[in-house]
Amino acid sequence: MKKRKEIAIYGKGGIGKSTTTSNISAALSDEGYTVMQIGCDPKSDSTNTLTNGKSIPTVLETLRNGRNVGLEDMIHEGFNGILCVEAGGPEPGVGCAGRGIITAVEFLKQKFVFEEYSPDVVLYDVLGDVVCGGFAMPIREGVASQVYTVSSADFMALYAANNLFKGIKKYSNNGGALFSGIIANSINLPIQKRILEDFSLQTKSTIAEFVPRSLTVTRSELGGKTTIESDPDSEQAGVYRKLAKHIIKNDNEYVPSPLEGDELKIWAESWSDKLLEQKETEHDLECVVPGAE
Ligand code: ADP
Ligand code: MG
Image 1 (cartoon, protein in one colour):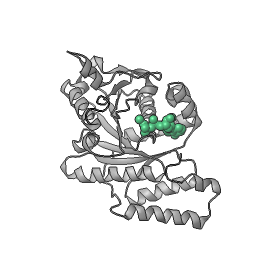
Image 2 (tube, protein in one colour):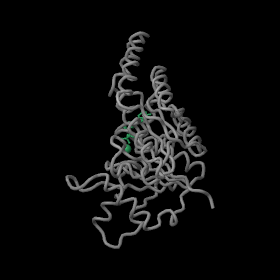
Image 3 (cartoon, helix red, strand yellow):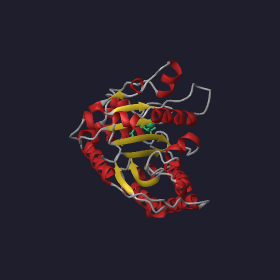
């Protein structure tokens, strides 16, 4: 029997996890793999571009609303037969979002979701602003075997990536998931690439791929599709295909070295100084202001 590959993709909110994950799913499905994508963000929009921009019912709302619900009520086929699942969140104002992920993942496993659907690849798209409670579950309990993070060169994104590294390190002695690479997103300038390269050097981590910010992605999203589906011959689709090929082959799993205490802040300040010294173009400087798109 083929070994199933279970991968969790973390990153701060809005950084491009769902966009990147859906394009990886779409690219892998084109290669003939059976792919399941499980959205673990309470926002529940992970799989929208695989289902023509529509939202699918989430596991939690299906559990809340129905009796005798089965897997078929929660697993919705999207582009190329990709198996789309959204864990969902608690009712607004009630309960913890992280708890929702645990309930959803446990339910799917109790119902033998993988035995029923036999996916070759399972991608968990997980919000990573805080790696606590339910959000840490795919790492803590080794639900996934490999973890990637999507990060831009912005400080807050790197801060979230560094926190993820701390979470991985903490659970690594107890069967937790290990790290397999940074997916550097929205990288258009050499300086952004250099910041990411230096961050990976400092944290003893690897970079899976550099993905540019591209209007092709924006256009595809507005049409409710992945770039792989809507613009398969574009350069951007080529980047996603290369990334998907890397991920499917990559067996490198390790514990990264997060920057501890003030180290991250000191590192970031050193870049601020370097930017001043190097007198990069005005445009370059604008693009590394923390929080800027
Ligand atoms: P997350 O899932 O991390 O919250 P999304 O994948 O929803 O983030 O992305 C947030 C926004 O950024 C979306 O509108 C998406 O189209 C856009 N985006 C993400 N990556 C890119 C990219 N490489 N090029 C252009 N737009 C992007
Ligand atoms: Mg998302």
